[in-house]
Length: 626
Image 1 (cartoon, rainbow, N blue to C red):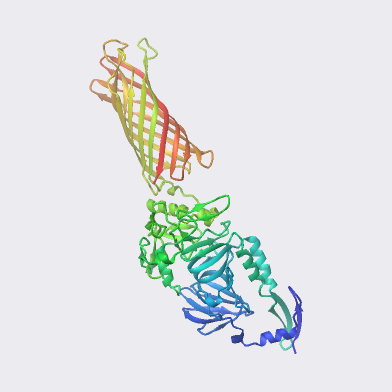
Image 2 (image 1 turned 45 degrees about the horizontal axis):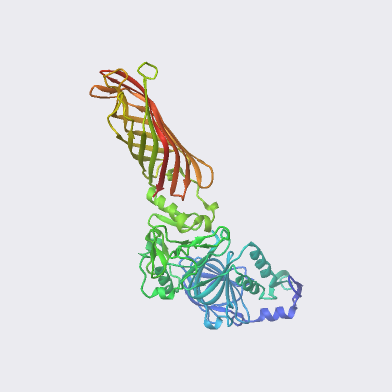
């Protein structure tokens, strides 16, 4: 005879007779579902069992049974009400319960499922949920009929795509998560008994109230934070997101393929057959419901509402939604954005295929797979992480990779500048031949191209065009009114905010030369001088969008003879100081001062002229990375 001791967790002990009657029932009588289809290998852990057993077609499944699928495996379960649940590979689900009213609760611990809820299982009242799926970050209330969901424990991201009908979704925050954990324990009464034959203490759990979790899930799904995800739409929830994302339409090509892939077939990455996501069939758009969110998406930092750009594809392995990038074009017919830059989908399964050379990691986002660090790939990786999966919003900044100096120059940078100021020439100021002259006007148009690189240095090409005018003066004759500078060079990354500069080029400048008529008469002669400079540029952050840019470049000017006129070698320097405002990560504007000065000495048949040359003024420049 077995003696039993009852330790209630919630409620009153319901007696030894109920214990015996419950445990004596046959498994098939208590089953809430059975295995209809199996591919590969899967195991089940029945309630109160210590070891799992291999799953077989036709197996009956009890409440609180855990199911675990292997890689490249698939299980289809049919519930008593006729609803179907397909469990994908490398997934784990728990059939928590099914009430007398055939309301089902499934716990998705990892992986992906596709569920078809029968019409008989849908709620009779409007908005009534009869099938629930919970993860650690979201709750789904099924209102019919066909949907696919995934949960990734690595990034704690729950993703949902509704294929037909509509599904309610809400984030499970920390407070509600703790509440559900308490209610899950409250639904059981612990029974401790000693088996007189083996003389061992045995512990069993007996259900007390199986509706506590369901009632709470119903409650939070009725709050204003819940969203209704309709056919053709995606929504996601993670710990980083303050609430579930606003539903948006996915790419029509992927939607059509997901509809056909009822058994969650998937391929190894080396076996996929990429299909363009640009063109969908003419009929698929009719099955997709328009979203209330604008197609371009939005993010409100005050409320936490986030709607990604419509037309993206869902990677069901990582759970991440890959939105169209900034190069996407708008499909007016389907009201989504489309872009091939974000990747493709397999033409049979609909699974996401990352751009060649990239891989989508559930925590790091896009990472480069090639051993050769192509700057184009690195730039694409950074753009997709920021724009397409909005990693800092969905996954969180704690997943940010450490900054590598080798990745600093992965984008080309174009700079267009305009300088307005003056030109000054002070000649033989310490002699009786002194002459000082300032220009009436001076302008300089600048263009610089800093080329992309996968290393810590990158080449630079530049061209400046200068125009200047001096007042007419019989003692100071101006022969030329314009000049060009052409140069090349390199930037070497010292840190994230500082670079070493190397400058080599030819600068056309105006040199004061004795014209021979009088010791105090000079001509301004244009000459091209080769210069070599080594310096640095630095950025000092002031606010989130404002920095101070500083450039210091000392240079050496080589000597040159042009006919009877010669220019001796000399030193000079360039200085630029400008606040920089960032419109975005790729666009910025400088507004500051620029100055170029240095002593110059010229010789001619009429004598030597020593002058202090300076050009400078207000500089406005626009920088664009691409």
